[in-house]
Structure formats: C-alpha cells, structure tokens
Amino acid sequence: MMLHCPCCHAQFSVEAITQDAAARELLGLKGELPPATFSYLALFRSEKRALSWERALKLAREVVGLMDGVRAIHESPLQEAMVETVEALRGKGKGPLKNHNYLKRVLESRQAVSSERGAVQAVTGPRSQVPASKTASAIGRLEQWKA
Image: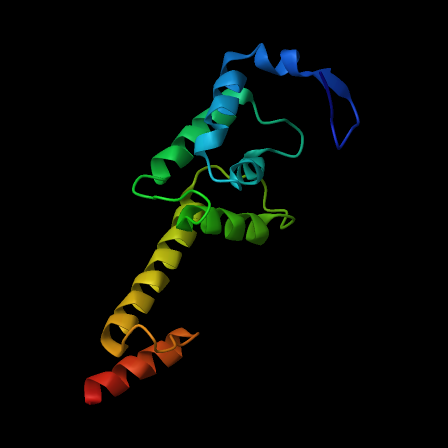
C-alpha cells in the first residue's frame, strides 16, 4: 500500500513507516489519543526538520499522562484544549513548542471555567442560564450572596 505526502507529493509505503519501532508504537497509541493529538504534535515540528518518531512517541505518551481521569476521549477537556491550542498557535510564527506548558495552561483555564459554571449552577439551579463572561458570572454571584 502506497501513501502520498500531501505537501511534497512523495510516495512511500506503509511498510516503510512500520519498520521503525517508535512509529509502530505511536500508531498503536492512536486509538487511545484524542483526535486532535496529531495536529497538536505538529506544533513541535521545526520549520526545517521533521519531528522524529521517537520524539513524537515521547510527546504522545506525555499526552496520555495528561488524560488521567478523563472518561470520554472525544468529549474530553483535553481534546477541546488541544483544538484551542492548535488554533491559537498555528501560523503564529513563534517557532516549535518545547513542552506542554501552553496546553496545560489552556486545560487549567478550561477546567476553572467549567468548575465555576458548576458552582454557579449548584447555587442557582440546573435550569438557569450560566453567564458568558467572567464579569457577568461575578455579578451573578454577588447578587446571590446579597440575597
């Protein structure tokens, strides 16, 4: 089976990829990873060099470590954080990522927002509408506290 590179249109066989142990293991992990993982891993690639299979595997394992406690892969906060990270950094020209710190900050901010929404819903009831901004949320909490 031949694969075609969408960028340079080079052809190579699937067998060529699976010769590398790290590539085989990374492809085996694909089912455990959020769908946005490979787009996210592309942020670690430099302009002049391809991301090695070993480095990609190491990064993917670290992503699996970030997923601890997440139940559904496709609906996970990690998936959403990865998509947000890729959209924010793609085409910015800031160079390749060195670590997962940006993703961790996005994930923490998403978790803080969701826990804040959960707290507001617990106080106001499940049918009330959650304010869209932090300011509106703070005003809503002050109004509830006043009552």
